[in-house]
Amino acid sequence: MRGVAAEAGPVLPPRSPPLASRGGAVRGSEGQAARPAGREMAAQKINEALEHIAKAEKYLKTGFLKWKPDYDSAATEYGKAAVAFKNAKQYDQAREACLREAEAHENNKALFHAAKAYEQAGMMLKEMQRLPEAVQLIEKASMMYLENGTPDTAAIALERAGKLIENVSPEKAVQLYQQAASVFENEERLRQALEMLGKASRLLVRGRRLDEAALSLQKEKSIYKEIENYPTCYKKTIAQVLVHLHRNDYVAAERCVRESYSIPGFNGSEDCAALEQLLEGYDQQDQDQVSEVCNLPLFKYMDNDYAKLGLTLVVPGGGIKKKSPNTAQDKTRGPATVGSHADEEEDEYSGGLC
View 1 (tube, helix red, strand yellow):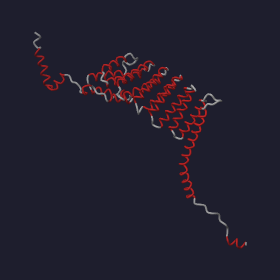
View 2 (spheres, helix red, strand yellow):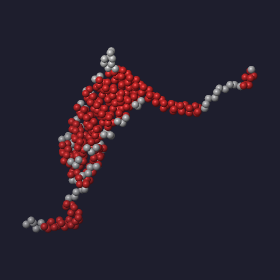
View 3 (cartoon, one colour):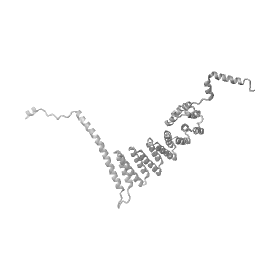
View 4 (spheres, rainbow, N blue to C red):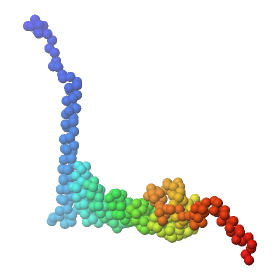
């Protein structure tokens, strides 16, 4: 038997597949497993959300031993459901859960939490690109913040809504920014109010709503004067003048500069000198002078919307530089004629007036 074993030789272990093929198999299996894993995660989150909704509905039920719904617990469960739906990217179901959460908080007289839930519902609509509806819910939330006595949060919500809708409906964004500014101003948070008014003014200029833009700029300027930020008042005066001239209202532009002389430091400033030169050129229909002033760094480095007003400003009459009648005649006659004309005048009075 020993001989037979010796002839057979040593027993070798089974050969394993090459490393390359093993690695390829692993990578392939990982790639195929990645996609189902994502779907499984989403399905798991949806099931989790549905469980929370079932619990919430149970809390809302009443019976012989439970006369009043437990709105607080129900709201908590709806909130958890909304988060789970959001993580599964089921935004419409998340919105619905947020609205139910808000309703439960309202029934529980918890206005602040109800407003937060409405705002979250608006954010879900934003994910679905339903921006006008999103803004409506955020506006509703801001009103509830005001009722709850948290105006700062209300103003921040209005600003957020303005940013959402700005590219779709600038008119609505202006309204929201102005509302936010009003809330901030009532709370004496003037710097935040100015930020909102500035956004509204620029949108009004961009939309060529120049009458409203002039009023908005005047409001900004008054508040800057109130907080003694005089250099910014000068800049707002420049913006006002450009807006008035684009409205073809030279009188309003001139009055705006005249009223600004009461602002400390304005008279004699670089801004004042440039505006006087601009008004002079506009009044004389001197396009060259107007363009020269509007190309100064003082004008070119303003906010883009105001800088564009300067670069596109055209004087009445097509911008043709007016010449005095005498100058025009002198040019046609030439230098010799001018000399002879002077001699004639000398001869006429050479003998005296008598």
